Length: 186
Image 1 (cartoon, rainbow, N blue to C red):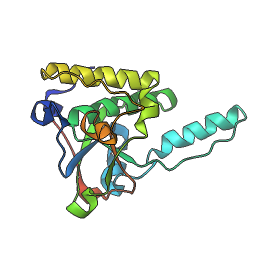
Image 2: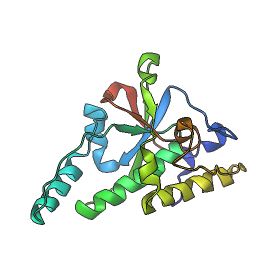
Image 3: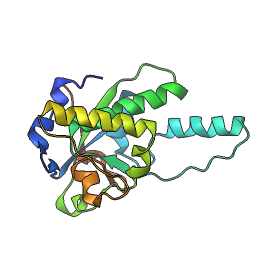
Image 4: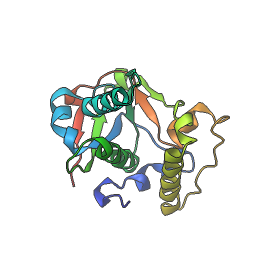
């Protein structure tokens, strides 16, 4: 799981206090969604095809499926967004056929909207399962690569800002217009 060089930005963002933030955020996703995102922006609970596939699977096995409205997940690092892009491609490949690649969008927000980006404390539940452990291992590798000791965080007692600063986990609870987005290409 090698991050492309053009997305390696931790060296510029990472300090002992964690990842620096600005009004530029990043969102990792699948190449299959690029055209839709460029046209419509980032939508909360935006992967309609994956949501529909999950709904059909649950109906097939006789369970009801309640779709939840997820916020738009963001991070302040291209490297971290790339990790989540890979997860999106992996998750989609289980239910949707086709060749997809991980991609990263930059999200540049004006000050009044940037103030609405929130630290993702809800990520604690994700980080306690296998998928979250893989993310923490990836994150530790980034810290190590930049000669900074990886944070030891007790997920249940952590300061809420540690989720943003040290783990790079944030969200925006509204749709983000296409004009604020740019596909990052090498």
